[in-house]
Image 1 (cartoon, rainbow, N blue to C red):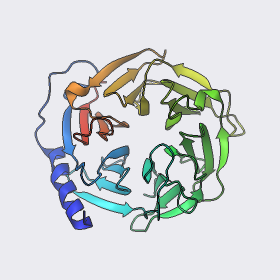
Image 2 (image 1 turned 180 degrees about the vertical axis):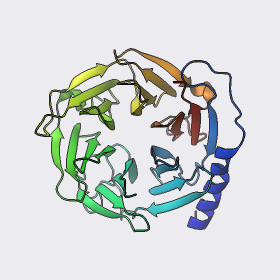
Image 3 (image 1 turned 45 degrees about the vertical axis):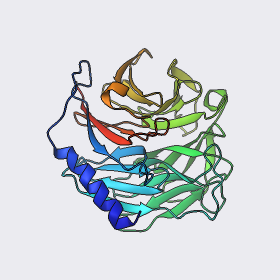
Amino acid sequence: MHARTTITTLAAAAALLTSPATATAATGPLPEPRIASHFSLSAEQQPENITVDRTGSAYLTFSFARQIVRIAPGGHAQVLATLPAPAKASTPNLGKAFVGGIARADDGTLYVTYATGTADLTGVWAVSPGGRPHRIAALPADGLPNGLALDQHTRKVYVTDSVHGVVYRLPARGGKATVWAGGDALEPSTFAGANGLKLHDGAVWATNLDKGTVLRIPVTAHGAAGTVEVHATGMPSIDDFAFTGHGDTLLAARDDNEVDLVRPDGTHTAVLTAADGLQTPTSVAVHGSKVYVPSAAYLTNEDPNLLVAHLDR
């Protein structure tokens, strides 16, 4: 699909963000869920990850389209960047190029992970406002860089590798990435290990997709990784997540068409399901009283979309 056509399609879908809600009956912490945007499966507009800025603009990665897209609160959509295609992708587990996690710095710079199975492209990429995407750190071509988090204070970027089962760390300005944390809790058992990633309250938090766990890794006074702690279990196919703003309470997306509310004690309850329109949900963002849940339709192959719900605080 041509870029102009893509932007037109996205704009039409994103305009639904300002349409009256077609709410389903819902109770609990996420009432009034609605599908705010429908994306094109044929154009590989499958949203993998999301971040939201202070204005309420959402930034999405379209994993297999290799795109970074901005959707403004008023509904205007813009393709900010398309990452270069490899000559021949051989991405582990996937076989094709994959844009994963995304984070945004205060100056507007966007950071994403990119996996192609080739040494010339796999790694962490950055896009400055109005600029072109460029790689700031190489990562192993035989890995699958996935989740990404930015520490605004220390100017460090953290990245999960779902194949190698580690967390990398690198300078936000660019440079060499080093293994910051590893071990059995992060490693895969069948397909993919360390996946989603967030920074919260002095720790790096991650999920393990194969093992269905939420992990907490304390950051020591010297910046090293402390002992990996298992915070929650029993969530098969868990992907990325977001904290709600209530201590350690978080919302986690699961590829089996579920979003779980995970409490500080590790217990969890499903708060969104396929009945609400989830189609392989991949990540979560919380902005004020809104919760955003992108669905990539990886397993359903039906309707990649963006769900918006109200956060009942």
